Image (cartoon, rainbow, N blue to C red; front, side):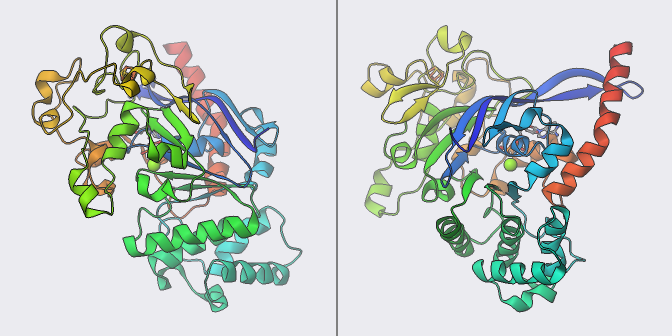
Length: 419
Ligand SMILES: Nc1ncnc2c1ncn2[C@@H]1O[C@H](COP(=O)(O)OP(=O)(O)O)[C@@H](O)[C@H]1O
Ligand code: SF4
Ligand SMILES: [Mg+2]
């Protein structure tokens, strides 16, 4: 059995409408049936463009969002069914490192206080003296001086702050660390240092990671296995090397074709697969294969009506495409343009695509999500609760959730009566 196993995980957020009585008028299918396994001591990289459900999936593992359906089994225990009291104990074993290191550290607490908080909550260390010794040794491991203890978050650089975020997870001796875009907010020059640190720590402490990123380059070297997400589901999963050498799902092929190659000669000849249209809304996902509205190989009928299962196609790949083999052998030709005309003439070609203006697809733009044309729109759609939880730890967020839970269900009942 793997250390962490997700089976058919769905997270559907209700869309509410109405001033007096909240009526559920639809759902955001943020995560819609994800099954994956994370082996002890390994790294699972989760990639996909902004809004495809990566963060929600990560948060569902820690039960920071309600799991609509499916199971999350850590070391033999299904967390999805655990009463909240017991879940609190399990939370120590699952830690999260957030994208924005400054936003996730309380500016009014010094580093010792930030790092001891979780230890006190989970009963680690018999007194502050013992906790301080442990914190010092962890700070040393993440490459921070021990005089950092009495300093405040604003006194550190971005990279150092992310080291503090990692230290905060490590002092709790977790089994699994979920790193959500751990380097996206950092300068490119610092990104590699933080990724290297994560790798060194993994080797030394035998840690298990789930690393979430929208940038394929970030997860490439650190991951043993990579899962590619599109609109709430996995479309392909393979050992890292196999995925890079031979992507098999049309969406992965397109993503991969956008990754620059260091060799200028190869780079010049690199053929990009540009996708028509934008990422559809997860509140109204396309029927059949979710990718059929943009897939350059989409076939009439079957692709629009039958949802493909993630199935083993050999070479370590699991692919959710009816025609993976035919596309690979060249038996199936393109049904949509993939060159520049894909983004300039997309309104003519795209079947069933919303009447949105044709833009360069987000996935194929440079890694920085803030430069994506739809980044702002995606952000708008994310309610405050879905954002990186400011200066609060996963534990604090969880506490709030647990406290709010009876309230929410009360509301649900009221709505049932009136609706
Ligand atoms: N609490 C929430 N309520 C409603 N919709 C949400 C919530 N959290 C996330 N979403 C929506 O779910 C989808 C997936 O979001 P997210 O998991 O943040 O994606 P990613 O991390 O891949 O960018 C987005 O459309 C987002 O707007
Ligand atoms: S099932 Fe059809 S639409 Fe989906 S990826 Fe395969 S060829 Fe493209
Ligand atoms: Mg995210």
